[in-house]
Each structure stands twice: as structure tokens, then as C-alpha cells.
Image (tube, rainbow over all chains, first blue to last red; front, side, top):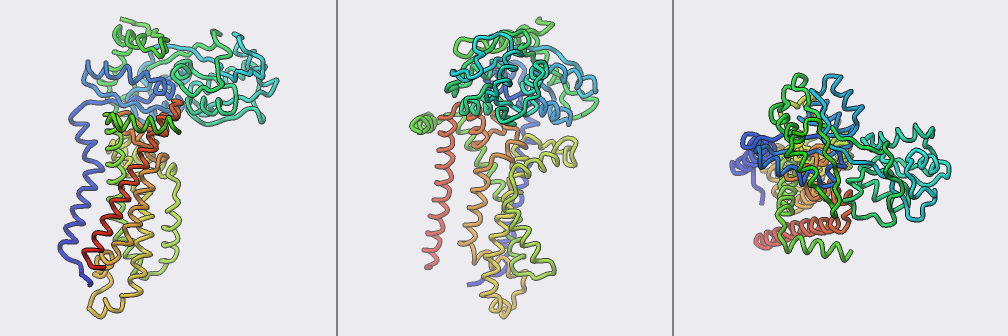
Length: 282
Length: 232
């Protein structure tokens, strides 16, 4: 009934160890040799809106470079890039982006496209702000009436924009009505819909979001709701592992005529989600 | 719910290419992590089961407690380890399936080790004397006891599989949920939920549960067949 340690056991163990090691390192190493790729740290709004799914195949078909997008909040995406874990960062907080470059983490920041933020809220509109254009006044009213507000609370570009509006409104949002979720854009819209709260969203995510329930746009069109996206090559001087050539090729394509046209092409339900505005545009 | 079933059926019936890719990656990551955890955990657990040394009690308690290691913390630790600024950054493993396998094997290892230790400890209490009388030392008894306890050990291995296949917190941090590269069933479910595609998300969840059911059924069937052929 008992068997002792046999050569067969040892062989099986050795084979299993070998396989496990290969599984851990093999495929990624093989891929790197086969096909050039870059890692882009970007935002949940661009991913959830479906823009990348539309853009990337065109770029890859043209250059043979695969683009791997890690979708995070703008704050986390910039941190990922600072640590050298991405080659390109594509986010929407101009101030933080310029700082990133000034600190030497990035080579150069370029405008790519814009859309705008909208304020979504329940149809019942407990704060009575529907149809307004002034985002700061609307948010002041929400705070004044303690109407439920769902905040991203994740240091993303949208979260930072929201915090700017509260500051301009002279409100320190606090209390039962103000709910910091620490979640991505889509997750926050899900939650806001479930608890009939107001929330700030980028229009791209809003248009492609399918679980709106009672939510609708209550405030839009304020120039302050402008939402600019920028792209930066991570500084290869800081992190030698950065694939500067391939990363720059992606940036050059994004701001080229073709890339800009591809961005303008992307529509959900007939509506354009992002508007190209790169400086070179040629 | 009805929508979710419809979405799941449509995905399966269409043999959706992306879905197949995601399912295969999920299986590859989870099974590799399981194998890695077994290669380390089975002998380690067996040794813990039969070898007595000072401080063994605290070690056993620690490994038992690690069965509840939060996936998101495991993910964060592996992230810091593999980040370009981290100690293993030069490997370039962050945001690859390799990183996900590493994170999941860390999560499963305590489960496999802990259950193996219990099984082997019980067997050793029962047969230890007999084995020693046959001239087998403790170390040489390890493979024997593992082989003898294989039917019970399968449960531990399946528990490890369950933990890994259901896990999202660690793989989304170290894998990055990159489409076509590190997107697994669970991270795809998280993404579809965030897009508000609740029916599709739940449909993917149903498929994941079907997969788990199929693998557990296969393990059960294999165990029964092995017992029958052994005349047990």
C-alpha cells in the first residue's frame, strides 16, 4: 500500500516545476520578441467609452505596434508612468500633466482631443437645477439643499474637475448628502443611478453608458465644463526601459491627420464622443 | 436575470472570439497559479504535517491565517515587487499574465499548504509507526503520504482553484485588465459592470460559474474512477 520516493515522483516534480516556470515567464518574453508593443496608461473614461477599441486597431494595422492600455484614474495613471510602468500616458488633467513634464517624468505634453463634462441627476431633480448652464451655481444649489451627490473620490481627472467646481462655488462638500465612492466613472454612474444622486461625468462615458435608469443630463454647456485630453511620452532618460521610438510613433499618429480623423469618426448612437484638437493637425 | 441568460447563451452560441480568448487566458492563469502553488505547497504542507520543530505551532497558525489574505493586498505587494522601480522591475513582468499567475499563486499557496498539512498530519498519526517500522524516514515518507492522501488533497486543490478563478482584486492591479492581453473573466465582468452592461456582465458570470462547475465535476469523476479501479 505504501510507495516510497521513486524516480518517477522526482521526474514529475521536475516537469511540473519546469512547466510552471515557463508559464510564468515564457509567453510574455516570447511576445516581446515577436511583436513590438507599448503600454499606455490612460483613464477609465477613454476605456469605458469604447474609444480605444475603435482607435487602436487602425494604429496597429498601420505600424505593427500593439498598444496595451491600462485604464486607471488620471492620478493613478500618472503614478504608473512615474514609476516607469508605462511608455505613454494619455489623460485629462492639464495642470497635473504639465507638472509631470516639468518634474522631468515626461518628455512633452500635447493636446489630442476634448469633450465636455455634464452634470447628471435624477429626473425628479430635487435640487431644481435642470436646464441650467452654470455648473458652479448648480453645485452650490445642490450643496445648499443637501441633495445627494455621488463623487468619484478617486483622484481621477473628473474627480479633480469636480473638486475645482466645489472650490469655485465656495463649498466644502461634507455631510450625509455627499458620497465619495472611490470608483471609476461607470461604477459611479451605476451607483448614482441606484441612489438617485447627482454626479459629474465626462460626456463620452455618459453616452456609452447603458444603465442610466432615472438619470438624465441636468446641466451642460458651461465653458468651464471643457475637458481636454493630453498625451505625453514618458521620459526615457528617467526610465531606460521606456520604448521611446514606438511610444512616439503612437503619439505622432494620434496628433496626425489620420489619428485625428479616427477620433472624430468614433460615434455612439450617432453622437460624436471626442473632438480632435491637436495643435499640429497634419 | 433573463437578459443575463440570453446574453450568456448568445456569447456561448456565437463562440465569440474575444470570449474564447478571455476564457483561455483565465484558465491559463488560474491553472498555472494552481500548479505553481501545488509544486511548492504539497511538499511544504506535508513536511509541516510530519516534521516537529520549535515554533511549528505559530507557523501553522500563520499559514492558516494567510488563507484569508486579501487579494487586493496580494496584488499590491506583487505590483510593488514587479514595478519598474521595485526589486524585480527589471523582469518587465508587470501588466503581463506572468504577474497575474504570480499574484494568484501567492493567494492559493496557503490554502494548498494548509489543507495538505492537515491531511498528511492525520495520515502520519495513523500510519507513522508502520512507515517507520518499514525503515522509512520522515522525509522519505512525504511522497508516500501525499500519494496516499491524494483523494483528500484534491479538495484542497479545488479550493485553491476556486479562490483563484473567482478572484479579481489582485489580477486587476498586476494585470491592468488590458484588452486581449490580461483581461480575464473576472476583470471583464468588472469592466462590463462599470459600463452599465449589467446583463452582459452577469452573462459572463454565468459562464465563469459553468466553467467552475465543469472542472469540479471532472475532478469528482476522475476521483470516482480512480477509486473504483483501485477497488476502494
